[in-house]
Length: 206
Ligand code: GTP
Ligand code: MG
Image (cartoon, rainbow, N blue to C red; front, side):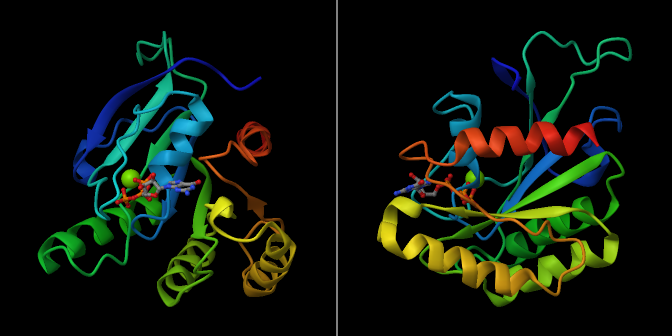
């Protein structure tokens, strides 16, 4: 079963502050404002655990969440860590900052041996963009397994969801590291959340 409750353990502003590799990690990546932090809150059933905002660029570090009650010592490693990430593609923040976050995200995604699965979040209203494609190519190259998750499905017509899933599947077909199924979610309405929890537990068990 999916663990509960969860706690925040660490914000990582640059790679040298990463915790030692140990527990399996799953990370949530995507463009700014796509709903990464909101999705984590929905998964862990705790509003406000991951900080969210209307304004893109809210999450600025790699934020680590683990099930409560694990001291994180060698003998008491958590069974799983969820990693919230800064978004990419936010043009309005100072270029220096954007470059810094993007590098942090890309370096982490490429080089973390305990990273079991990346959930690549795509806003249902926007679909796959050029910078998502860039991240997918990086993950393909690094052979890091990832699964696309559509967010904010409450913002589009229900009848459009199957078509959007089909279009997204077509967009990931040629990506060797992409998991060939897409999960449609709404953090707001709690849609697809249980399915995502099950997918995470399965991903870390392989
Ligand atoms: P950054 O940390 O800035 O990269 O953003 P993020 O991807 O973490 O997005 P965040 O979770 O902060 O959400 C951005 C905005 O989208 C907030 O105003 C959320 O309330 C809203 N939002 C997130 N998920 C949903 C959803 O499922 N439905 C709707 N309608 N709004 C959502
Ligand atoms: Mg965030």
